[in-house]
Length: 431
View (cartoon, one colour):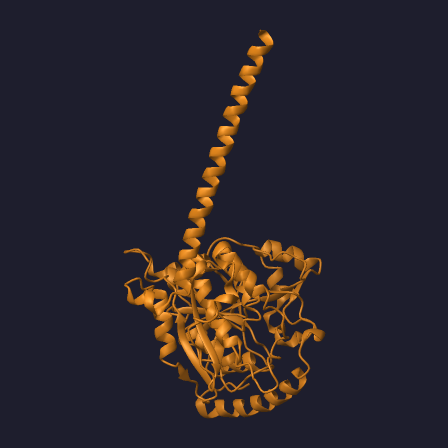
């Protein structure tokens, strides 16, 4: 009798557990279907048909992309490249609350890439959670891939949607089009969302070395820098390569500095540039960076390839300054430009643009720094901020035509310096 009662209780408990388990399974199934429905809706929004759009379900982002593409872009000064500016526009300004501090948009990051390196955007946004303008160069089949990728990023990645302006540059004989026919390249993305887009970008990484896009295709780095610069409404801009990351809190430090005083009209704020061993985690603060620097895991940018290109920064002096990772940006010292220094800096929109005749490898940033010098700018090195390149730059990682391109651009640089004499006839400075 006692044993029978125990069996009955056991059956009741077991039945209750089975009911709970069944309810949990039904709940998880419901959540899964709901998530799938939401993602499928996003996927239909991504590649919505014109028929759907005509039924009143227009997606403003999609319609903006269609319009941008329909314009056919504009040609650059050489007529060799087609530029689609603001192909995708961020929601940053439209989402600003009334009365928001306008200084929050005073500094933007500008960068450039091909889809081969677009995967770096993920790490960059983790650190830089502020406005970003990126110009992408695409050639051949990559034109349609780039168009689809940036649109997918803007739909599936809330942070990209909020902060990133995308611009596209291709050869003048090519045109970008809406990715109606490219759905097969994004299979499964509706389930993975933003991580799925970056996973797809990973499959496009390292398909060719930097600048080795094609035998007759030149990477227009300075054109891309100018497109990214002019594609943002920020008053100040930091132009870096996409595989570089700034120190943490840089935006806040700069805005705090603006509350006290603005940089002079003829002043740029130099951020010392470093490179870090691939296996190391990116340092966030100066104290972390200095620790890695002292054990050889971090070194000056281009330390092996062109030590003179960054030497004027005076790394030994900078490293030995008192470490203040918090507070506003502070100028530690001001130095004169010397050939071939190519610093990374925060500058106003009024800073001279990059000379777009420089393409491929060599003298593209040096030429712009040279013009700043002749134009009368001073270079103020900040004590508590920096940029870091992921990985050591070594000879073997460059494409085979690097030296040939460098010689060609060296000749171009000589004529460029002569042109500065006519552009700034009263300047006592020269390169």
